[in-house]
Amino acid sequence: MLRVEKVIVGPLSSNSYLVYDSDVREGIIIDAGGDGDKIVALVDNAGVRVGYLCATHAHFDHILAVDYVRDVLGCKFLMHKDDVWLLEVAAKSARKYIGDDVPNISEPDGYLYDGYMLEIGQHLLRVLHTPGHTPGSVSIVGDGFVFTGDTLFAGTVGRTDFPGGNAEQLADSLSKKLMSLPDYYVVYPGHGRPTTIGAERRGNPFINLTKR
Ligand SMILES: [Zn+2]
Ligand SMILES: [Zn+2]
Image 1 (cartoon, rainbow, N blue to C red):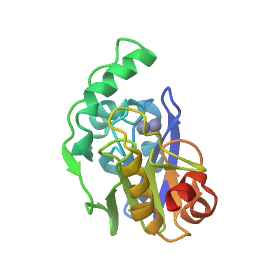
Image 2 (cartoon, rainbow, N blue to C red; image 1 turned 45 degrees about the vertical axis):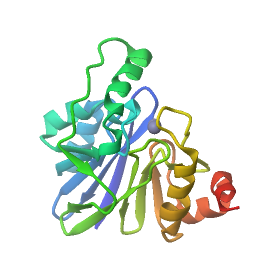
Image 3 (cartoon, rainbow, N blue to C red; image 1 turned 180 degrees about the vertical axis):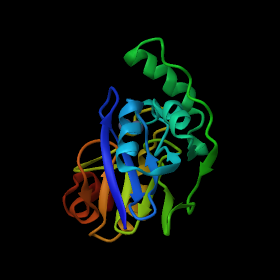
Image 4 (cartoon, rainbow, N blue to C red; image 1 turned 60 degrees about the vertical axis):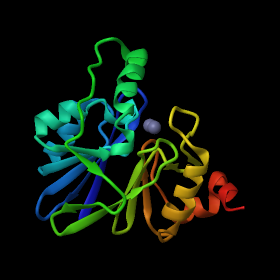
């Protein structure tokens, strides 16, 4: 069975998740937005080996600790190629927030794309390309849950007024991809508390807007 654990990290309180198979003790990390030591401690406490660190998108509050975590855990960094241009932008905006000593984030070791399958022990997680908040935003779907990054939150959706954002794409990603998942699926967003697809389908004003 897969387990999900989370730590809240970085200057913008983003969620960093560890999803792992508690039998074979293998896992992946989803987003590393800062406080790399907290993320490594989460992995150590769970006693799992991490093969991959995946970024839901390349805003700095989701990738600041990528290099640290990749080095310490020896895992591979994966993200969608449509966000690679944002890596440089991310380092610049991070410097604005937290100071000059933010290094550039290195290139990914591989790319996620729509339909990409991530293996954890016997389990498979499927990548959905869900652009709109950024061009290369992805969601990662397991059996009964989905990591949505900054595409979908409890009660709201991602902003589209940053460079590369696109409101129409976001609406499509929500209606055609995320909202095609079953109601009982747990949503683990990039910020804030978990929710479910059903709760958002019924109660999220931005999703109801895109339906009309
Ligand atoms: Zn973002
Ligand atoms: Zn964010």
